[in-house]
Length: 289
Image (cartoon, rainbow, N blue to C red; front, top):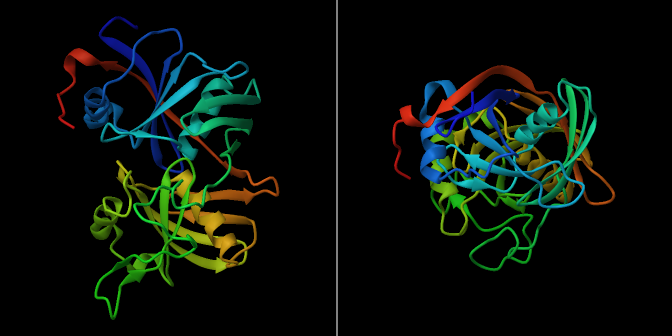
């Protein structure tokens, strides 16, 4: 069933990060921000990120993938979503290796099975202009940004990096001791981040493990954020808090992250298929963005 007013979709998740996959490789359709927000608002097609496959732009790739947040905005990367795309393209595991393209560049995916899918998330960007930040910081391992009183801040000195999306990671002793849902939206929209940012609080539990919670730009609190796991891993290694290979545990589960010697970040984790559905544009409730 795929008429002018309907489109099939797959509902999946990566560690509870809700993902909708739509295949438009044989269609000229594109989504408006209003349509994306309306799809996200519908109970049957609720998502944190929607991965829309378009015809490939680059030779050797399977697809150009546009990534949308629930508020209708576009993202450059989504690690959990890319694993879901990999599983979809593998046709249930019958194929193993793929190249797909996003705004962040060409990403490689290796599908071993549904419990182990690895995505090459590319190279992190640490320069203040590349994140981007609104003003110059020569050392982005810790920038001047805080929550709370100047003389006794609740959070301060986050590490910042771009892993397809801008990320800020605050280092804490206990990730459960902070109301991320309260200050997350304030920090996401802080003037220092001209393109907004994903806001995480991270706790180092060993030289090979982290605990992480994330407020995602355009989506809010989620059970898992793959790009935030990558961001926290490389920032921890850069600050010499951990080694270059760590297990990052999020509320939805654990991802294995390796910042390889070639400067690429490799993320490994599972996906789960939930159900197939149909987007009926004639029945969507209009959402302003």
